[in-house]
Length: 408
Image (cartoon, rainbow, N blue to C red):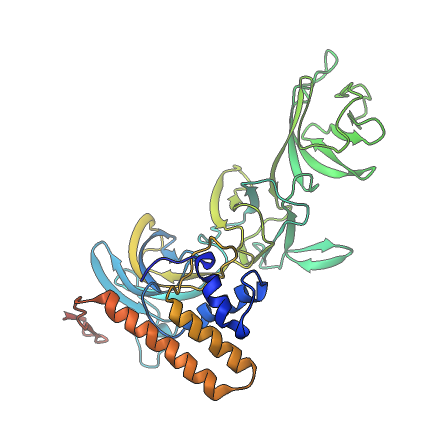
């Protein structure tokens, strides 16, 4: 197999798709992605699986976005069994896993983050790049009383809390520095939390109760505290739009990361719009303010979902790593530079034609082209493996009788 990007194959795929399609047609990209997704579900072929090291958090491992399921598992150099979600519910089976059964890896389904919340936490979001006004992220989950977190949006309640990822979104705090005040007044510099909106502009409030806001008619920041002289920035020539990394003389206002108003005990879904850069999600301790990363979302990732497995008996294990052989998950190509998972050009062509035949209700011909695509993948796998010897492994577990070692 060879490495291929969408841009390197789109001309060839365009020639066979719908009797000739323009290589820049968005439908060609959609057809290529659909062909990839179908072929990935046909079996384990060249390039569809890989070896990966994964960190252990809370006795669990969570596969990265790129992988669908674990095929093999090795902890500290010792191979072990991988079980699906039915294992602990088999009739006459072992039941719930005993503590210390580290030679098992048990499927725990899909989760929206690589690390779970260990207690009630606020959620804080950092963006690597400045995002547009339409960029948002929605967190859905429950609090420590198992009540669903709900917020008001456009006059109606929604499930979860949504944060705007753009600068000037109105739900973030700002760090104020460089403010000078009359003698005898406390230093107003520090963190000001978003408070309300005044004249269609955000207003911010400090822990001391002082409030500043942007005056739309003369472009300057003033305070709304009882003392009208406190914190006023005497600057009449500011930018036309209220800025988020702005400096007037010695005063600077810097937008801080977005943080949820509600605290979450669990998160069961994250919805994100497509963004320019990566988005990093942190859980924030409500007492100490310490942060721990729970998710790192790619720009094209809009509905994050990751496979999680438990290692029984290692609930407190942190920082260790395990090695897995994992099946790759379908991730759509978006740009010409995106790598394809299925790189067999012939198989992609045959599958693209099969989809077209299927959509025209010609199922018999569609099946023939699909079978040809799979045949090409099998031939490629045979050549890639070469003379490698794959030994079958037999592993038996006898309930109440211990284990029998692997027999190769």
